[in-house]
Length: 101
Image (cartoon, rainbow, N blue to C red):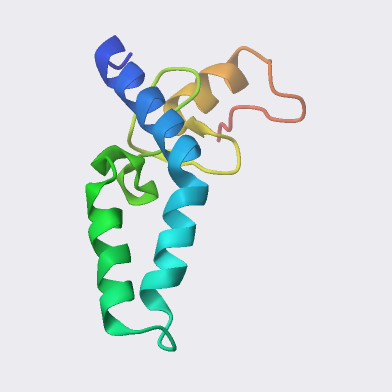
């Protein structure tokens, strides 16, 4: 099980990303528009830099919904390989059985 503080920190980041997504997208569009004057694009870059760092989507890290584990994460299932194996062994995932040979 991951530390509660790390799980909560990730939740806080997700909320910030969601909150600033529209503003960040608008500023990026202005900053990358070649038709606008250089001064206006530079001002947009400065405003973008003043936004909280954790509002950037690149700072998010995928974590298991069950255990909070940050590594060995399956995106499609939103859980780690260990949590998936435990649930499969308990028979809680339909159609999935533990392999044996």
